[in-house]
Image (cartoon, rainbow over all chains, first blue to last red; front, side, top):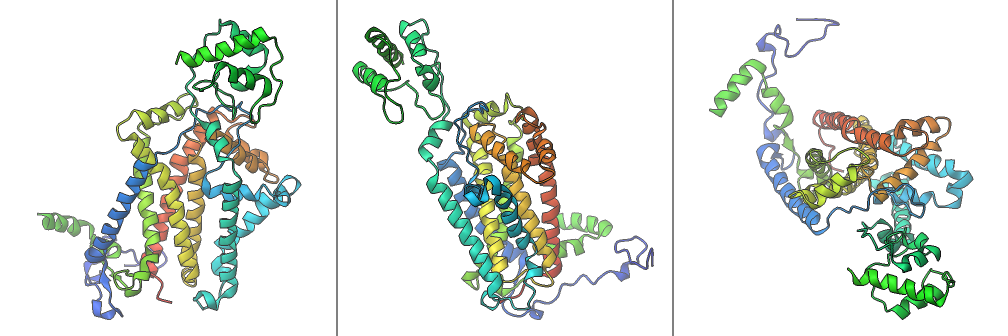
Length: 257
Length: 224
C-alpha cells in the first residue's frame, strides 16, 4: 500500500500483518565481545547503582539542609550579590578590567559566546575520523584549556568572596520590638547608631545586631566612643549622661531576652 | 493474567516492536562496568537522567506548597522548610539535585568529548545534548529566584543587568524577562516561575526525547 509520495505507513491498518518486521531479535552471538541483555540483566545493575546513588543523595539532603536567606529586601544597597556556584566562573570573568566596564561586551558576550558556540559546533570543527584524544591535539587542547579556565575562575571567585559577610548579610533576623520609650532610644536615634544597627537593634546589611551581645556597660560606652572593627571612632559625640543612657538602654534590651 | 492482558493489548496495538526498541537490545562489553571498571564513565549520562527524574518529582511536590507571589513566596518556602513533614528533604532534593545534575552533565559532556563520540554520524545528538545543557543552565538561573530571598533577588538583578547589556535588543530582553523596564518584583517572579515550571521543562522533555531516540537509532559509539 503506497500513500503520499510512496511512503509506507507502518502501523497503518491497511498494511497487511505479514508485512511486519519479524518479531525475533538478533541472536546474541551476532554481537562481538561479552554483551549482556539490557532487560533485565543490565537494567538490574543500573537499578542497584541508582539505589546506592539515591541513598547517598538523601543523606546529603538531611546533613546539609537547603539554605534560605531572609526575605528579599530590594532596597538594601549593601548586599553583595552571589550567583549559584556553577555561574561563578562567568561572574568572576566579569570582574576583570578587560571584561567589564567599557569592555563589558567582550566579557559578557564575546568570550562566553565564542566558547559556547564552539562547544555547540564541536562536531563540525573537529571533523577528522580519529577519536582518541591524543590524535586530535587541537580539540583536546582547547577543551583542557576551557576546563582549566572554568576551574581557575570558579576558585578565584570562591576565594575572593567574603563568606563571613555573606553569611551575615543573608541571615534570617528575628526582629524583637524594643522599648522605644526608653530615654536611651532617643540617644540611639540622635547619635545615628540607628542608621547602621537598625530601628530594633537588628543590624543593617553587614553591620552587626546589638541584640544577644555579651558586653558590660563600660565596654559598650568604649565602643560607642572609640569604635571597633570597621566602625569608626567618634560616632558618639553627646554628653556623658547621654552615653550612660545609651549603654543602659542597650543593656536593658539584652537583659530582657 | 499479565501475559493475557499484554496479548490483548498487543493484538490491538502491536506494541511488541515498541517494547523491543526501548528495552530489548544488547549492552556492548566496552560500556559495561561489570567487564571493565573504567566503563563507569558511561554512567554519567544515565545519572544525569536519574537526577532529572528526581528534579521533576521533587518539583511537583514543591508545587503543592509554593506560592509564586512576592508577598507569600518566601513565607511558603519557609513554611515548607520548617513546618511541613519531610519538607526539608523534598526541598533539599530539589536544591542539591540542581547542583548534582550540572556536575553529572559536565562529566558526561567531557566523556563524550574526549572519546570523540560526537563524530559522524552522531553530530546531531551532540547538538541536542549541548542544547539540553543550555536549558539546564536556564532552569538553574530561573529557579534561583523563586525562594525570593536576598541572594535570589540580588543574583537576578545581576543577571538582568547582563541581559540588558545585550547589544540592540538589551532593553527589550530585560523587559521580556523581568516584566518591567526597571522594577524587579511581582511580574519578574511570575515570569521566572512560568519559565522554570512550564517553558523550560517542556523544552527539556522534547530534547531529552530526541537525545534518547537518537541513541536507540544509532547505538552507542564503539570502543576507542
